Every structure is written in C-alpha cells, then in structure tokens.
Amino acid sequence: MRRPIRLNRELLRKAWPNLRAGCPDPRGLLKADISAQEATDIIAEIKIGGVFKTTRSNRFPQTTRLLANDGLPPRPTVLDVGASDGSSSLSTMESIRFARYYVTDRHIEAYACTTRNGAFFCDVEYNPFMYANRFVVMYNDGEKALWPMSRIVRRVFSGFDKSVRAEARRMLLMNPALLPRAGSDIRLEKYDIFEAWPLEKVDLVIAANILNRSYFPDARLCDAVRNLRGALKESGRLAVIENRPAEQSNVFRLHEGRFVVEHEVGRGSDIKTLVTSLD
Image 1 (cartoon, helix red, strand yellow):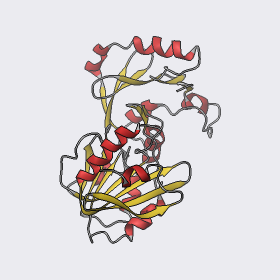
Image 2 (image 1 turned 90 degrees about the horizontal axis):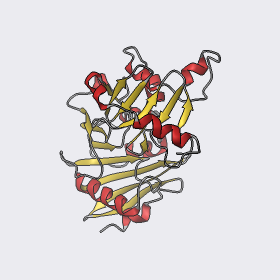
Image 3 (image 1 turned 180 degrees about the vertical axis):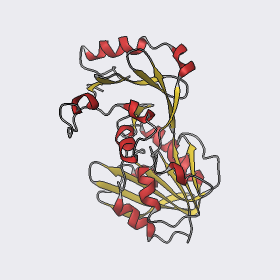
Image 4 (image 1 turned 90 degrees about the vertical axis):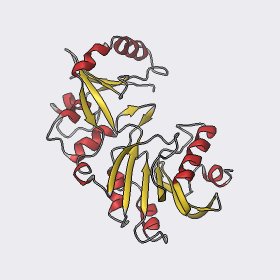
C-alpha cells in the first residue's frame, strides 16, 4: 500500500459535514447505536489478512437474478464465502428462497485495544492491522509505502504492546442488520477458503470478489476452488463474481467432478479457464 496513512474522516467532517474524503474512523464500530450503513462504510475500508473487506449491498444484481432463475432446488442451501460484513448476502437473500444460508468470512470479528492516544485494531491472535486516533487512520501495510509513511508505520506498529489486550473490546465485523436474523436458517461462520468446508454440502457457493489474482497466485486459487468444489453437491453451482468496477461473473455447474460454464455476465470471471480446467 503506497499511502497507508489517511486523514480521519470524522475530523474533516467537523469542518465539512458532507465530505467523503479521508478514511472512516474504525472506532465507530464500538458505538452501540451505530447504523447498518455506518458499519458497512467502516468495514469496507478495513484491510485485514492482506485483503480489504470491501462491501456494499446489491453488488452483483445481474448474477443474483441469474441464480434466482437458475434451476436450483426449490429451497437451496447456500454457502457465501468471503462475504465480508454480509451486506451483499442480505441482498441475495431477498432474491433466493433458501433452506439455509451460510454467511462466512475468514475474519468475522476483531479486537480494539485502546491506548492513551488512540486505538489499535487486532485480529483474533492480537496481531494489529490498523491504528486510529482523532487525526489519522493507519494501516499496518508499509512495505510499499511512500517515504516517510513507511517509517512512521513501522514505528507506530512496533510500539504495540500486547499487554493491552487484557482490556481489549471484541467487535463483530458484521452488518448490524444481519445479526438479528442469525439463527438456524442463517448462520454466521468463520471460514477460510484455503481449508476444507467442515459442514454440510451445499447447492450453491457464492464467491464474490475473493477468487482473483490480485489477491492470490494461481496455485492458491486452485486450492481454494478445490475446497469449494468439495463443499458442493453433485450438480451444485459455483458463482465467481468480480466488480472491476463493472459486474463480471460466471456461474459454473459441477458435473462428474468438473466445473462447466452455465452463465456469464459481462466479460466473465478472470479465472474462468482455471476453474473449468481444474482436475
């Protein structure tokens, strides 16, 4: 990241209330009364595990319409991987009548460790990935940063004291509108696509904006697709979707252990050939 230090949008809005510049303050997730839209705006700017949790509602309407009319079982079981805060999942639920819907992400929670001057945000193993104070929001990603940002980032995060985790506050990185709906039919699960899916086989896997070469090399993408293939029932569907910025996707059907293309939106997925040629 070339510019891992951003101005805190909340500070700027004191002078310009409607300004969209800067980065939203992640400390807003600690507010009990935060709205669903405010939470989504913050989560979309979080980078954790090397991946931005970019999210918004109704990100892939064309693909959703295809899936709703795709010949799925009357009440399919759906696995939504890399779903970030579940905003897009909520939109998909409005179109597909499902028996069970798994909203999953590798990072569904984090911890805020408050210090005298600001707050560090950490994963479940207390590795800090962001820092915020009233002036700036900083990412722990200074490897390709412009000087002197790289030096500042190293100094700030090297000073993180893990002893503050004793007073850390847990945060769910999920849309507040989704949380009340969680139950037997809507499940929120921590899941890493580079591991085998541990629960029931599903009729549909949705992989939106996660299976792409800007995040992972082809060898890792193959591993992930194999795991998702293992999660599917025979004749199940895999939807691989990208927004770059226009929607582009493929819906694949599993036939005798291999994926075949059923539908394409826009120019299709960048990894279409990788998926269809997978042994």
